Length: 252
Length: 70
Image 1 (cartoon, rainbow over the protein chains, first blue to last red):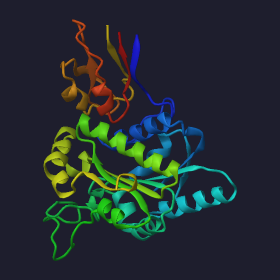
Image 2: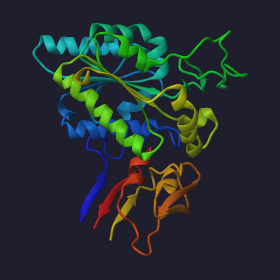
Image 3: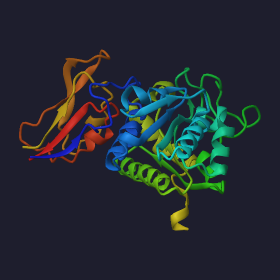
Image 4: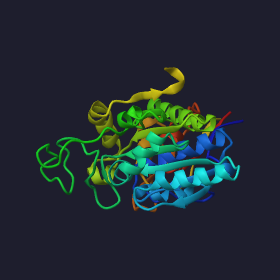
């Protein structure tokens, strides 16, 4: 008898995710929990949740969590990290945000945390819309994508172009690691876990701001089945948002 | 006899596990789950499960709580 898989220890017992069926948020939280278990970080971790669907992180993840104002997760994480450092505690601090939170409302906080080289980790779930409020156009909505606030598709004249977050963070001199991963098949899920682990390890080594953007599905607002949502990421979105590592200070 | 455990209270009937199983051992059941849809069910009459844990990796709700190899 050998247990190949069991529920991660960092997931609260009997907790049920409140996400829609097929939502990749659950997979992302599971990967974060597995990495926390593997690095044995549960006792010293402080997670910073944001507004949006990503807020449900602290319903299920069994670590200390704090809620931040919309978009300000990186600023709150900066404060926590610095205050604990001043007292001689070395806490592990990471933020878990959506794309609207990280790249639109909180772009200033996020980008300047990276520029300052704050020793925190940010995980950004990119599902190309504002999922919780009903699928409005977000900063990462692809050109031509139909949302509730772009009924004939996103166009450059009115809405402008989408932001490529991972590339932007890679340009900041203070960042140590920036990668974009996806969760549409097993190979990519394994790779996503590897990159999240790397980002967490870079913070432990004190190398600076580490960042992982996760391309994830939103079946409810895309009005597709969970299977077709993964197909859309594989065939369309991963062409627009190329997967890969954009910055890695240890391998330069 | 390798097997998996599915928590019926957590399954939201997205059927991602049904598509990913290389041996096609997970099927729609006839039991209604909390979302009002037929939940996933593991049926392995001929002990074909290879405990690859792909279903557990892909499940967004950690409804597949354990994968045991033996």
